[in-house]
Length: 145
Image (tube, rainbow, N blue to C red; front, side):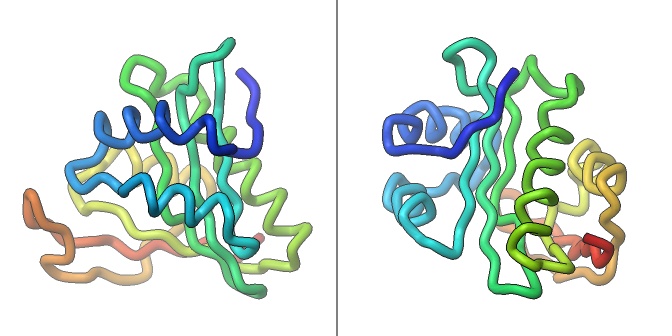
């Protein structure tokens, strides 16, 4: 597996993965906006030529936010999510970011376990934030970047 910067030719396979994982997928325009915004870092994880994960991150030092992270079904629990997160933490340090936040569905235990493993802690809840299905969002922070 290797991690590289997301580029335009990655958008189509990333969107397929996005629709596989999320009930509220981002649009093609949203992905192009992210890869062209200087205050975003967008990365993909590949095995061979296949994209098996991606992460979209925005930042304005001293804070950053994980906007999106996904790992293809069948490739989960193989360290890909951890590698993507570790890559963003290293990038954050270079950008003088000292704290990163994210939100996650309350019922997404696998994702919450990943984030906790990467040093994130629950700091709040947004009631009924997600739709399709309706669910609370857990707000998590890693303030030790």
